[in-house]
Length: 409
Image (cartoon, rainbow, N blue to C red; front, side):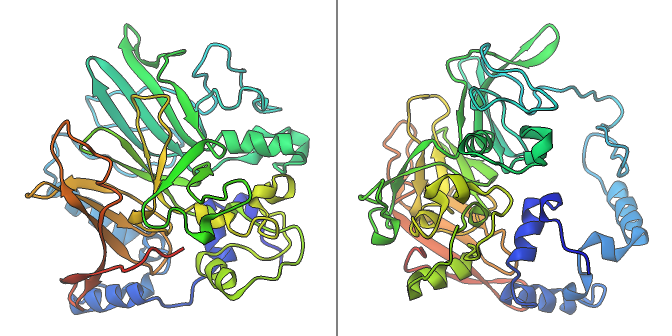
């Protein structure tokens, strides 16, 4: 049997193959029972990889029925596989920004053979984009975009085949991920990035962060670099996003576990061993995809076993204040955050709905203690309140949520 080349897999697929869950998870069973009650194709667990298993006939029938029942103000288009963008008749598309495009006029140019040099790699648009939000204030538009992971084969010299061989290489890869904040504006030729805007910045794997909420200061979050357990560096594997009523950006740390590793055999205490297994932090001597731990001791669990505990959160960013330090909100739970849908309840409490990207995991709801008032203090809305986990009946209807009594570290 040929060895799997993990470098050619998506980050999610690699995580699933390296750290597989058991065959059937609790939520799989919930879905299976709910779907079975409706007699829909026999059962959810038989679907395998989803649409690919259902076959072209299923997709075509679904597409046709959706088209007939469409309530959109445009004609839907069929799936395409030619590698370009397709839009309905009457619409046009254009490129706003590409991976590696400059945010500042002194940013280095992209080189297809050598990538972008480390010096200045935090002054360009990030890579492998995911969640994004557009913010508007007094005629100014700010676009915030997540960069979930990075392609080493594109950003490192070709002869290295995507593998970092120095601390400089690791820093370069760290800079391309995280979040891009950039001003955009419409001109005669359409929309463009406002290069050199004072709002433009990159928030990456080395950006200072504040840790708040119930886990802040916990012994498992303390490191030699931060003995208080209240400050950290970087936000990781930024997947989905959200926005708050007071105009800040929420970015979601998803498969953070893949950035950590070990350079030697590691002996862990019971708490660390259980936590690393739960979240999929590797305890094997293996360079992995990025090999951060080979050149940056912060990511080596033999030297900094608490560092992985400082990732896996919802991070709040103020788009309009380049000097504001992003905040990791531990009250919203630590897991592989997929999204952060933020709304106001009828009584004014702030509610955040969140999903866990790990297969078979849970859905959560955060409810603030305090009532939101425009222009008022917003410091407690994501740190004081209740975190609840969804529970379901077999038919898919909900059971009143149960409070999560602690933040899992």
